[in-house]
Image (cartoon, rainbow, N blue to C red):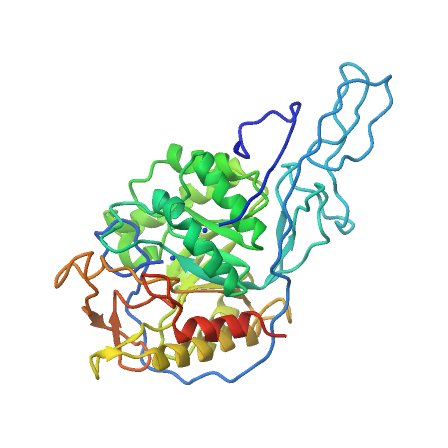
Length: 443
């Protein structure tokens, strides 16, 4: 399959889709751009319950139209795809992209194949690109998501998950679809190849959009992350770009200090906006930032905040509403499936945390109410599958070890790094998976 980028709008724009794809990570600042936990506050209160969940999770795929080249000087009508069928006479311009469904005053994407994604107050609005190239009417979007950093037995993240996304897509996309999830958050860009584009095709055909981290580490060059943006930005599955992974805890995995990391984050946000005006940019931060840190990254459209405060997310939503008028997303949350008190797997413990924390997020969706009490576009639970490479001190990537560190995790106060999957490394769903699928797929 061809990529969604570097194609002239005067040529034929064709987008083909199939089906397959998804996983997330933990805390060693020196281990590439692994996801994971920073220090968290003490235990908080559990949230209540809700049955709130809306927004479809079955996206349609986009087929681009053909550019008009001939005719006798009459302007071509709106095309059924990217560049409009028909066109002006010789030397004229192509017709406009399909724009059905956009409300008055909302401009179409610059890309004739991208979905329409924009921010209104605390809300994220999305109009998906349909198979005939038209755009659905934008609607408030609930991120019902999962963090994805896939590995198998014996595999490690040696600096990037980019190719691991490709190799595990076939098993993981069905898992994501089975959750009724509509969003996956990555820790690296997909491999810039036909296989990377095919993976986006597969996700979009499964109703899943992608928040793609394109710059997670301090030594990712501007050329590299803008190349990733330019390669994938025209694909309708792209929801947003991400910079960093709780960068305040790890200084982008090795920058000299936090000030240096903030400078690199700002450079990346500006460069990504310049490369792609169609998608918002998030910055990933551990815990709600201070007012000073928040003010120093003014260009971010949204903030993705990794939160591990036992069972209390509500206090963080309240704090965010006092700090910002921009949307926030819970970029990581949850509990691992190993009980450090009983020294055994504890699926009930993980499922309880999944239910309580996800319910709190759903009760504060900005899609439901666009106000400071509902500032959250949603969350991407940590994580889809276990990763056995994480405990480097006591094990290896071929064994399931139980090392970790003390943290405010329900209910044992300990983060066991190799047990965070809501499915096992063999891709067997745990009770937390079933719990989350019930919440995401509910009324």
